[in-house]
Length: 256
Image (cartoon, rainbow, N blue to C red; front, side):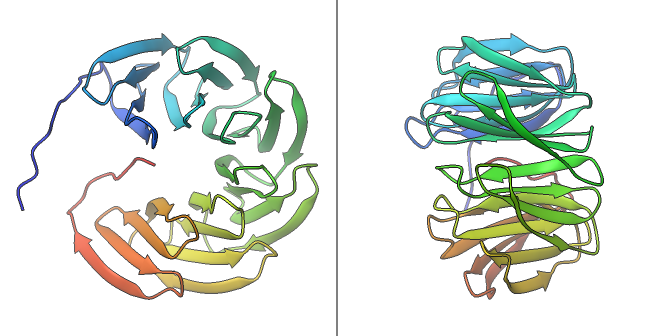
């Protein structure tokens, strides 16, 4: 099957991350040129905002956009591009996620902390891990918050910042997601392992792929899971069976 692009938009740097709106098809693009780009489904640039460092990640919901930048800041915008708040950390920020309406945002920083921030930009709590925090996620109501650290641990918290559990892996964490209800947590590591947890910390299964797991997405209840590695796209069932896989060569897979 031949796939043709409907449009293309060129930035002045490498695209570090893409995030898509399920409501209207708009796209947020994080670029190494230090800009976050907000593009309509027709390919029209609606607005952009320049930070002071490479933009590492973007997280777009129907209500808001949160952004992490290597300038050490987490940014929060409304859909029109108005900056609502900026939270400065003491290290590069590599990942960010927000609840549906933006009431809460979680971010990870190279200062080894997980940050939990309210809709006004106030830090409600932060937790120090043993390494750079490169991946974070939250459920829709922020009752399940998880993070992956370069100390090779997966951490899970409640909304109040209490550490519920942590799990030691064999490599640093390269991707982490949770289902919208927070019932399941899925994580990928640099050694190619994919981990599937219940939210009480029970490891339900683990499988190994040959290359680092760069990105993960799942259906509403994790009935299906897609994993992108450096060389292959995998489509899995909730019980860990590989339903199909497709080799794509050496490409960097992104987007959520």
